[in-house]
Amino acid sequence: NQATFEAVQEVLKIKAKPRKTKQGHDFPFTGLMTCGQCNSPITAQWAKGKSGGIYRYYRCTKKRGVCSQKYIQEKDLANQIKARLQSVALPNSHTDWMLKKVDEWEKEQNHKSQLSVQNIKLQIKETQEKLDKLVSAYIDGDIPKESYLSKKEDLLKTKVSLAEKKDNGRTTKNPLEPLTQWILDTKKASFLAFSDNYHEMKQIIQKIGTNPKLSDRSFSFSFIPPSDFLASRLAGRAPTTPFAPLARLSESAEILTSSDLSGCWESNPV
Image (cartoon, rainbow, N blue to C red):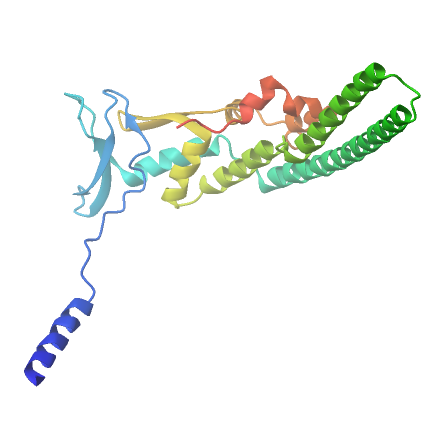
């Protein structure tokens, strides 16, 4: 009836109204660091400052027992992070130069790879021609069965090995990719050293840093390779040419794929 219909419509209207959701607090640096005294996680909260304003503060959760660490205001924490990022900050002219150089190396490497693949294809073709001639000679009775089978097996192994080399050449990861990513991370860190984007500041520290600690209202972390080298290099005076250590890498492509250097480009383990 009409009354039932109207009652159902009213219920549907109520259900169709969007429910109010509880707004979460925005604490960009939570999950980044631990307490330098007790190793407990660092939490955050709103609190009233001495001047009466409401500010975001970070403090030790004291989950591991008694801890004497005090609060630190978010803006003070952010300023310390910016100062730390400035120790690996490079001018855009430097990072742009490096990216251009890596792009040149990539083009050279791609050219060499293409030549290598073409050479392998030629060898595969020559091996197949030898196989065809071998089969023809055996059919014509020019060689005994034992010699035929032995030579056939050798040629087939060669062909399989060449095919694997060709496939590996296509799927091999670009050894310059980690270097490019590091340069981009350095470029981003240089920008964030003078920015107020706290969320991205946290992300870049997690990429190029390790072991972030908060102790006595002082934030600290260590840079991972090769950012640690850059920080120490800049601390001792920057090179006069646009990042000379990277320029020397062009002397040999093998340097970029060596076991010693390749370990430097690994991402920071979680």
